[in-house]
Length: 263
Image 1 (cartoon, rainbow, N blue to C red):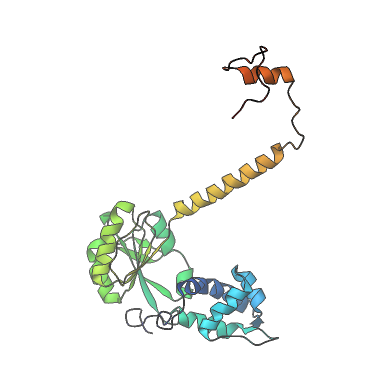
Image 2 (image 1 turned 90 degrees about the vertical axis):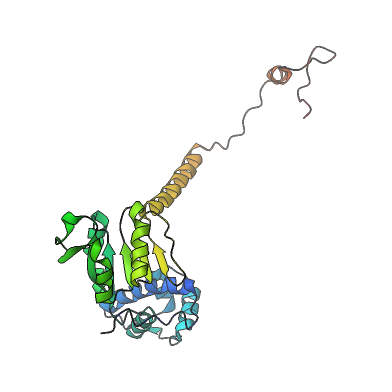
């Protein structure tokens, strides 16, 4: 089976927009679920709803793949799975290294979805000497001193960084220098990489903060709705208006101040 070192996805050379590329995994996930239920065909409306996009956008995206479906029948599920998998480069084996085997790194190592989606965890790497040799998800952890050799021997072009923020840039630099050209970054920091290296950032705290913003806004809207009083306020007595308006002002000729003061 081919490795990620010698094969790259064809999406860039075919001019598929990045926004479309970002939606292809959503379509593939929905299609895979349909395939597992032995559904032979699906309409654009049904697939768009399952993927969380509108049907017009889906049809536009699929036009870049050369797939237009059949009127009255829809799209062939198995063929679309193959088409999208091919465009994403998932019809080949992509060896991946995970650097940083703390709680998050260990959770990623134990994730069972990598293999079924074309990714093979080739190595787990950590800077802690006491971790060396310990199995995580059946794979022995190796020390960061071996990072370059591991990448070279396994033909790795995709690296996952799950280290603390302070160590992430140094790890990134070593990965790039060793030949890794795509990085998935879970560290809460922005990485600096040379041209030609792709970085995808996953920051769980930022996603939670965005959700907190929306929750706060919804709570505020609900509170405003519950506390709204549509009854017009009663007009205050004229004497009270005159007293408030006259605070800190000079009296008029007849001893009173106007009820409405000039702006």
